[in-house]
Amino acid sequence: MPEHGGLDDRRIQDARIFVANLQDVVSRLPVGAPAPAITVDASDRTGSVHCLVDLLGTPERVAIDEDWWQRVGPAGVGRAVWQALEFARSKATMARLTLARHGCSNPDRRLDYSQVLADGPAEPMPDYNSPRLGGVLVRKTERAMTILDRAEALRQARETERERVITGPRGLFRVVMSGAVIARVEANEQVLKPSDAAGLAEDATQVLRRATDHQAGLE
Image (tube, rainbow, N blue to C red):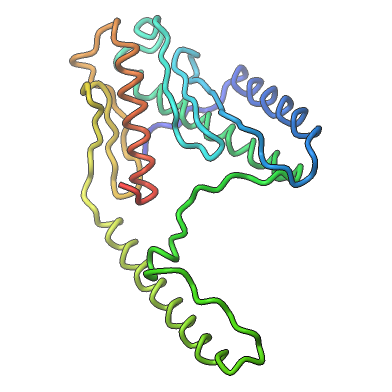
């Protein structure tokens, strides 16, 4: 796994202010209201690399300040991107918990894997006095067993999957996946130049999006 970056005092304060501001916003909403449109921004420990995610923690954009070469350098920029993404996802989790406490409905764009693994949606339950009830229960049990069997086969396949490298279109940034796990986050130190901030950020954005899709089984 990539190296984790512990939170420093500046970023802890940033998280506290973020949650306080969100609590102020949602306290004015009616109970059960949809979650407000929220994007979450966070930075690495140096404050020179930034990551924007949605409420579910999906990467939307990476930004790198022009002075990145002096502050993190080509050897540290991959780690800095990972720190910014981790912090942004932590803040997104705080946001979801805050919204839930205030009764706001959270977004959910997850796949219904039961439909994927069982070749379709579940059969509706009939009334309990219906003569069809016994047959439906049998078919539901068979469907549940099919889902479990296919899920286990998928888990085993993902665990034994060979390493996969996802590289940005410019070749400046890459992620190494081991199954569904991000094993390494790397920048191409050999070709990077101080003027590559924008291109490196765009590569990182595209790579992290593809890695997230891969983890979700969408790629």
